[in-house]
Length: 359
Image 1: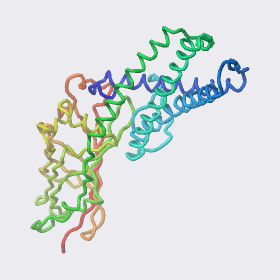
Image 2: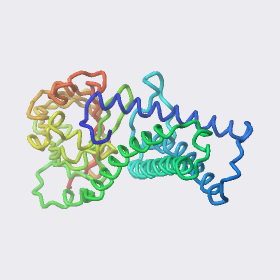
Image 3: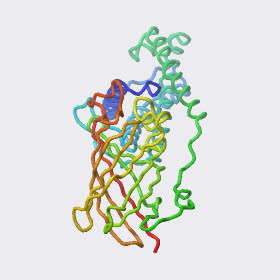
Image 4: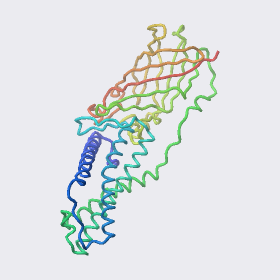
């Protein structure tokens, strides 16, 4: 399923996948409780001690996998800030906050549990066939199965094995991108004019929040550059320009980041950068202003205006701004993504700048 093209249908499949996973978790917990209440079936006298041990071992693997896989998936959804609803009826509670490292860890653990389940189910089927074909006892019948079902089960197991192995090799071949820092940006040799701000990129951020099936998902851009010349007493000669590297988008999921820069969304290959350039400023109170300017996203330019607040002095200036944008106004979300039932149209932008000015 992970190999499918990103689409509303894929998002719906993930919803069903998670919902059935939570059903399995609930049923497994009930089965464990019932197992300690109900009378256990005694093993056949023909079973060896090794077979008794293997039977218990495989059952333990099954229970660990059936409980661990949905729980790890639950944690993975929370850590990656993905929706985790039950057939769209209600949201499961968040066990953890968004955490990219935890997301990667739980995704790996989720895969391990998948391997464990495939191994346990495969051994379970092979053991049943061994008893039926070689030992010729009624173990398979006591399990409620038939040889045809066992053979079909092995055939079905080959499908997830193929996709998991394929995904594993692809991950091994993919190298993680080098960690991007803003040290180079901060250390650029630049000729500063009067009232030009020197941006502290380490403590500044351009972030956003969008919705997926009503669930808020946050992200930010790692690489961007800004040129700000601003004096609240001289707005006429003030200006601001921001350039954002679209490929540096971070949402807590590498897969989601790759989808964001694809042709249907930001189309980063054709439009690698987003640009904003101010046209004029407007003062609304002592430290509150409105900036007007042109924003170019995905090759489309729109005039936008948004308020911001100014704090501090020349030694340390802090700017905070929050405002909504319509992704569809910039053509972000083509084809089937023009519908807003899966991904909402409104994107909430937040800008936090920390800077200082040379005396």
